[in-house]
Length: 220
Image 1 (cartoon, rainbow, N blue to C red):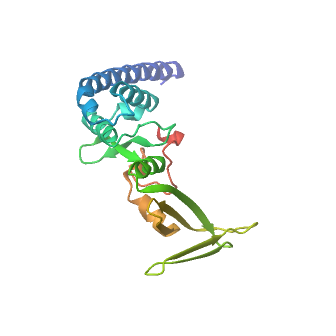
Image 2 (cartoon, rainbow, N blue to C red):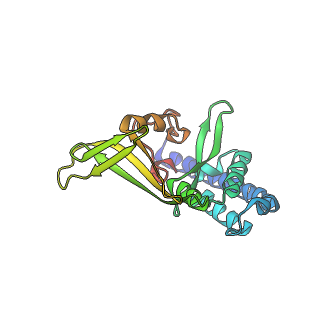
Image 3 (cartoon, rainbow, N blue to C red):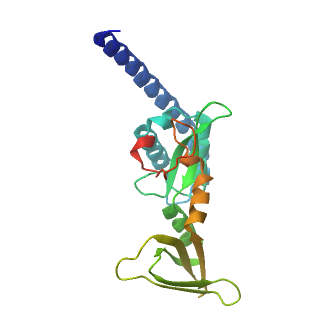
């Protein structure tokens, strides 16, 4: 096949793909608009249904894979985010619409994934938490923790050459004056990552050996 023929065929395929994406986005926009009255019923006061629709459509248009997702899964994810008052905007980082391969139905589906900023916002809105702090522990840091009746957490970072990462942890200061914390090993973190659908590579449909971030360019 000549180079000219190949170029022409690719141009046609790209044109068809662009038309399909545009058609899908129009269908999604119409479906979200029809759902606005339902969204309005569950939204907290700080959000409007029009804002939810605008942000959702902006997010979908930025990620062509989302336009390939089952429309019902997209609507379900947007509704789920609305019910807890989070915006599916990768800039704010509260929540994300994540496309993943549904092997059972052999197509892409959308899944709501709440980011750490979203969890922080939900915790603060509960009225029980003053603040939440997270940290990374390296091998040369001075670090001790203990669970049980006399829970303790002590962390003094090394001032230089901290070494490799060993743990991550988070603690919360509660409104009643109490404190809670959770420590995870890197093995714990990896196990959690491996269980997430968002870590599936779109090409191989398998869990990626290296972590895939929400904003990683290769997944859009």
